[in-house]
Amino acid sequence: MIDGSLAMDEHRPQRTCLGCGVRDDQKSLIRIIIGADGELITDSRGYGRGGYLHHRHDCWQAFLRRKNMHRAFRVNISKEVKQKLIQVLSEGYRE
Ligand SMILES: [Zn+2]
Image (tube, rainbow, N blue to C red; front, side, top):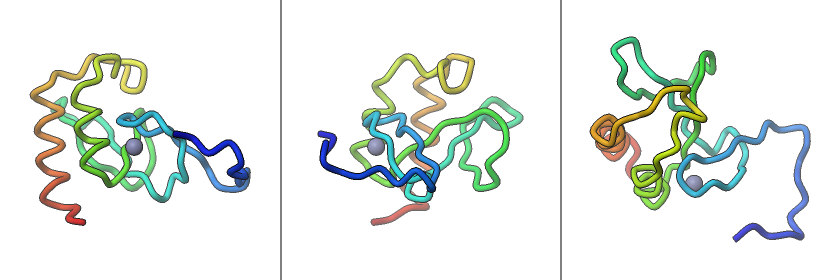
């Protein structure tokens, strides 16, 4: 749930998590782009078309279930590709 009393800091870029759909500070999200071979990869440089995810397993699972990914990536992302990304995230971002 979004807290209505939360003051939005306009100076910091806000991005929407592809999992839970909540806008958050860009720095607290993982940037995801499509690699040259059509796979989803994490990218910290911030160019190209992509989306964002929280560092949370709940968000990754929600991302897996969502089907309208072409809004962020302009192409449809298969479940296999998403599962591969989440596998990589799980190994690299231990909580
Ligand atoms: Zn999220």
